Length: 256
Image (cartoon, rainbow, N blue to C red; front, side):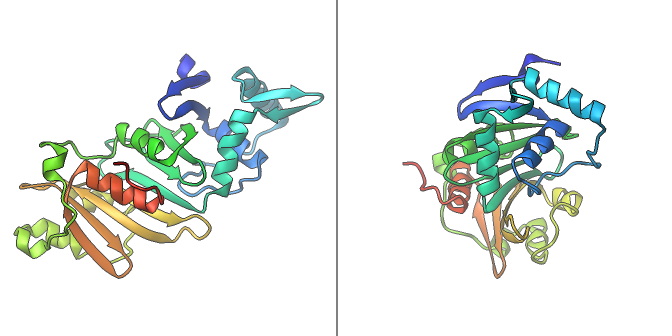
C-alpha cells in the first residue's frame, strides 16, 4: 500500500487522510456518529476480537489512534474531522452520471469536511477539513465540473433561459422529469440526456432533497439546470456560476 493511503498527504485545504472502509466507520462510530448521509458500508462491518485488535494496531501505526493506558484514543486531528461531520446539518453530494469520478460529499459548518470515495469501488475514503470555499475548490479539482471551452468570464451569465428558446429536445425532456426523481437510480437516463454531474443539497437528519443542479453537455453551449421543489431554471454553464450556486448552498459569500 502506498504511503499516501497509509498516512497523511498535504492538500491546499489542509491535511488529507485516507481511511479504509473499516477504519472510517470504526472511527465514526467511536465518536458517536451512527449514520452519515452519502456513505455507508457495502456490507456489515462486524468483526471478531482478532480482527478488532488488528484494526486497532493498524490505526495506531497510521497515527489515527494513540495508546492511553490500557485503551486507545483518537488523535486530535482525526477527532476534529469526525466532530465537524457529526455537527453538520446538511450534505452537498457531487455525483457522476457516467462514472467519470468517484462520489464525494461536503459537509459544511464552522469548518467543512470533504469525504471522497477512493476509487470507483469506494473501498477507502479520502477526507480533509477546512474552510468551505477551499474544500469546494478541492472537490471540483478532483472531478465534477464540465470542461470549459471558452474563457469563464465570457460564459458567465446570471440570467436563466428557457428550454423552448434553446431548440434542444433532449434538454426539454430532461427538464420534464418530475421532482424529486431519484437521481442515483436514474443516472443512466440522465447521462443519455447529456448530464455529466449531479449536485445535491440534502438535509442530513431526514435525507430530504432540498435542491439539485444538473450539469449537462449540450451541442451549442453547456447547461446548468437548477431544481427545487416548486421551481426549475436553466442557466448557461460556467464554472463561476456553478461555484456561486453551491457556495450559496453552503452559505459562503462568493469570493470577489
